[in-house]
Image 1 (cartoon, one colour):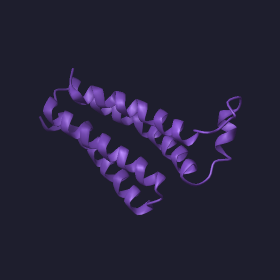
Image 2 (tube, rainbow, N blue to C red):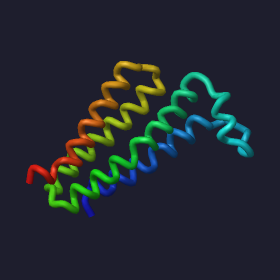
Image 3 (cartoon, one colour):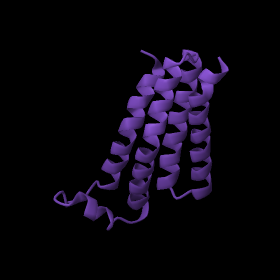
Image 4 (cartoon, rainbow, N blue to C red):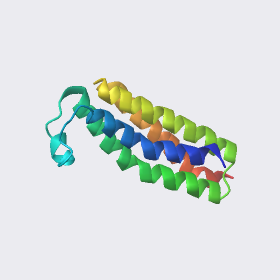
Length: 124
């Protein structure tokens, strides 16, 4: 199985890791979504990173599956998928650390990697 498919799994689990961190120490499991509004500082930013990771997951998963099914070179898709994951992890960590400009740069680089994956079959 290509590494890029494993990257889809990592991208799917990343929001759960971020949500877990954001809500660690919370005692309110009855209304967990309501308790997110009470978060502050790094945990609030981790929750925002969690939401952003979910928002970006579908495009990444579709791009990888489409690229590999429409004949893109597996090694290139693998490399770009690994770069995407690295940038998304950096994005989350920079979000939590409140480094807005660097966070935006990581987001942009991940988006460029994702677009590149998606359009690869057009250049085969």
